[in-house]
Amino acid sequence: MATELIDGYGRVHRDLRISVTDRCNFRCTYCMPEEGMEWLDRSAILSFEEIERIARILVERYGFESIRLTGGEPTIRAHLPLLIEKLAALGIEVALTTNASALTTMAQDLVDAGLSRINISLDTLKPERFVALTKRDRFDEVMQGISAAQAVGLDPVKINAVVMRGINDDEIVEFAHWGRDNGLVIRFIEFMPLDAQGEWTNDTVVTYDEILSQISARWELEPLVRGSSPADRFRYVDGGGEIGIVASVTQNFCHACDRVRLTAEGQLRNCLFSMDDWDLRATVRSGGSDDDIARIIEEAVGAKWEGHRINQVHFIRPSKSMSQIGG
Ligand code: SAM
Ligand code: SF4
Image (cartoon, rainbow, N blue to C red; front, side):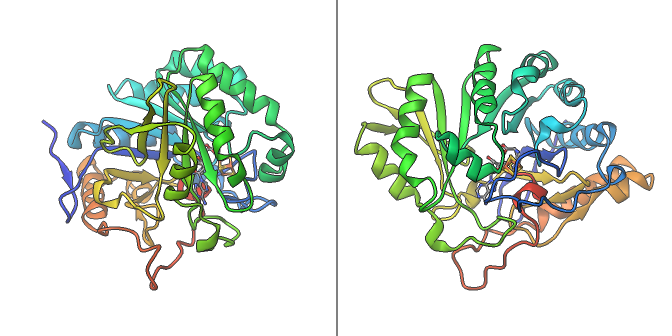
């Protein structure tokens, strides 16, 4: 019988994000420097068996219901479908966040292995801008990857678009149009101070209110029940589908956060903006028992803050970027 994994503010944790690699084949300007990062050594990264063990403890002891695989770019981790198969066998939903560059060849294998949900990151519909933003000339592959995800029956396919002032904020309505026309749920994401280059400032954030007012000036929207989703969800009243806005900066959803994160090197983090890690890899590799691992998990969740402090004077940027934590 599972017990609830509750923090000091009464939030029950049921959602795990696992970064399966810190490496990436793209260099999105808001996430990674052009030259890449100093990659982790292969031996530093958790094996599939180690990941499965930690996941099993979270599912069996604490009733976790879903796991999202992320990175870095998760599809560049060799044999990813094998990991999905192991995790799906725990009886939970397995989701993936990806840049879609590998989906034309992998989408069917991922679904066959048990993948049930997908989010694809795409921040522009303009091919030249895509190259500037990702430092890779792979726009066509990504668009084909999105179609491949739809063709293998992943539904809905959600598109994560980080909106940055002066970079792609002229495409908000165009993105909404494209989502409506193609049966995609667009999730507009506020730019967070987790870019590896440290160029984020408050002014670069295109806010929830700005995004919502641009779209609702064009179509009538109706709010949907949010649940524990980080996105505030809306449906088009005319039946054109759904959008989401993830307002991590201006309207954080920390009060409803039910998530913990496991980095590629086996560090448990209780928040994207946490300054601390809890080292599960050391315990796993030194022969620790399931009880030892569970104790660390409970300690990490017990130490969770009430919320991040981006908008406060004493906010300190985490030393890790989004690609190292796993977005
Ligand atoms: N490589 C995969 C991808 O791009 O979908 C998974 C990892 S990526 C770090 C996960 C998500 O984090 C992506 O949707 C990306 O847009 C988002 N992200 C990265 N840096 C961000 C930032 N500074 N602010 C907001 N979102 C960010
Ligand atoms: Fe890679 Fe994803 Fe970061 Fe882009 S957002 S650099 S695809 S990890």
